[in-house]
Amino acid sequence: MNATRHDSVGLCWNSNPADLVNGSVKPSFDLLRPWITNVHINELADDRYPWRELFALLRRSKYERYTLCEVGESKDPERFLRWDRARWQELFRA
Image (cartoon, rainbow, N blue to C red):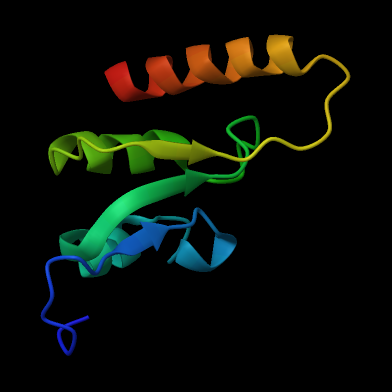
């Protein structure tokens, strides 16, 4: 990213297991934060990923952009999206 030196270039935090260092996203987040321009959230219902920590880091860094929501198959997509929105709001407020 240092090589690009362009304001229009950024990174998408992809919320992958590879982000974790000893169960924490903080080391990876701290390394990439200056260039994170959006965040991809693949499954807020999966508690194996440290969502609470990620959202705390986003709040502390004053992240004010959007997050992408990946939705798999659902028998009731509207209900799922309502749940996902409520979870997102709870995590961002915490």
